Length: 154
Image 1: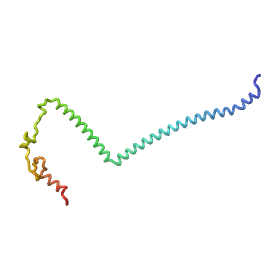
Image 2: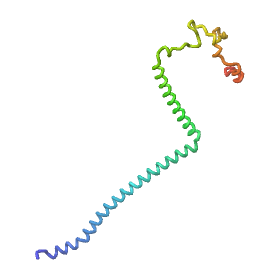
Image 3: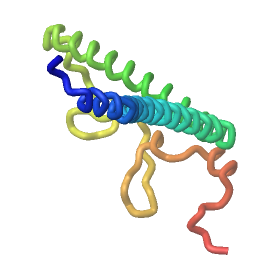
Image 4: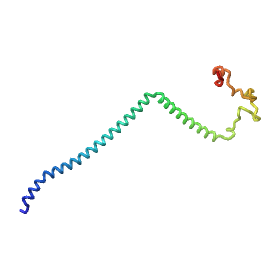
């Protein structure tokens, strides 16, 4: 037998210590892995909580400020109608460009070639000595309904 009895005893004496060391290394590895998983779960929970808080804050804003949401809705509707008007005007400008030039030229109804008012517009001399068309002057009913001018000092 070429094994020395003392070596065998030394090996058996070291086995429990070696086993304890290997178990400690494995447990350390497992603990790190579980801590990393727990950290990922915490991050995911914090993100979901943050999203929930943002949603709750937005809901509170909508509840506490209904006028703001109403104004936003009206603004969105106005933007949509403005876009529609722009599209229609582009279509009309495209139609006008397709027409012959003789149909595109129209007379102005305000003045004749010499610059004198037509029969449709009556002119009234103002206190400044200038003449104004009757259409540009305010109606007497409007003046009575509006009350005194804001320029008048009390």
